[in-house]
Image (tube, rainbow, N blue to C red):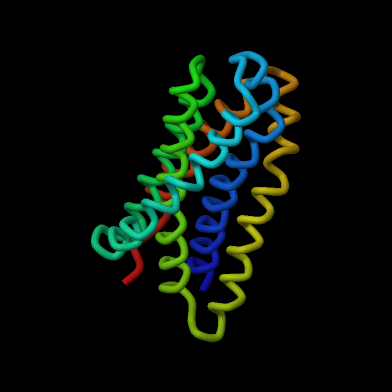
Length: 184
């Protein structure tokens, strides 16, 4: 039971980190918009790129979760997420920012179905609804706290939030590699 709770906590932490990273971009977008002389329309496309790539890749990623395993997809998704945040932090041209957001959406497409399936695998029918509620709370909390942390870190530098998210996601991937055990 204790191991199952630790596993659930790590899975929720992974979701929190992924959605925290999505929210980090919000307070920094006006600064990046000014730095790169982007229009509001272009910034809207940047935000949409994440969601569109997640939408398109999710059905395929869901199949891969069953084919390649939950743990592997979570780790791969977190590594991709780390790379996408690093690219956004380094991005000096709009094409690199788009590549980052597309990669970020793909990473979320890998993480979401894998975590959902993993939680379903490690819970009973009696505890599953509660665990899924925690999953929803982890996502919402990441979205809520992300802009605040992004704004705070942006005081240090406009790209610092992305480098911080990249490092945190990489640590989460390593932690997942060593702690998670593929469910039976």
